[in-house]
Length: 175
Image 1 (spheres, rainbow, N blue to C red):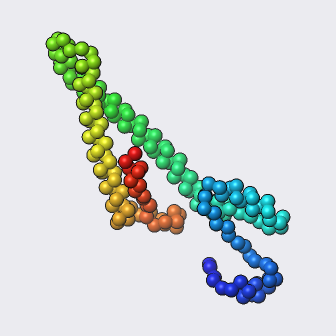
Image 2 (image 1 turned 45 degrees about the vertical axis):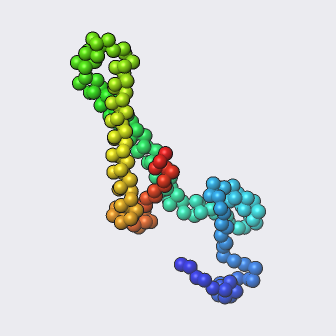
Image 3 (image 1 turned 90 degrees about the horizontal axis):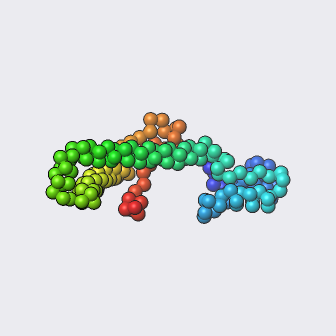
């Protein structure tokens, strides 16, 4: 609960002296310095006062957010592994299907590098096509989620939000 009132009224109701307050908040611009600034404020306060950072106060929320970071790394690693295996499999199937073509090219005097270039061009085409189609589908899902919020959490009280948040950053998409 929040109450916006004159501090003198609050001190009178709570029986505090004019130089007493319940708590105060310090805002910083760089979140990476939170622990350092918390220690600095703790060192500058009296021993009978408590200093807690937002990470300590809302520990559950920050633990939940850190799970996202771990899950994101895990999911991306698995996706890269599966994508790599799929590309290798596609190239092997492509080579096995083209065995007669390789024999014909070698019989006509093609060098090994020429035969390799055929498969590298084919692989580049397949990978480019897959990247384009995959990115169009993925970015479409993100755009529709950002616009229409169609994916919702089953229990918003557990997650503190109602729908899955997404963010589209053009520099990340282009990278």
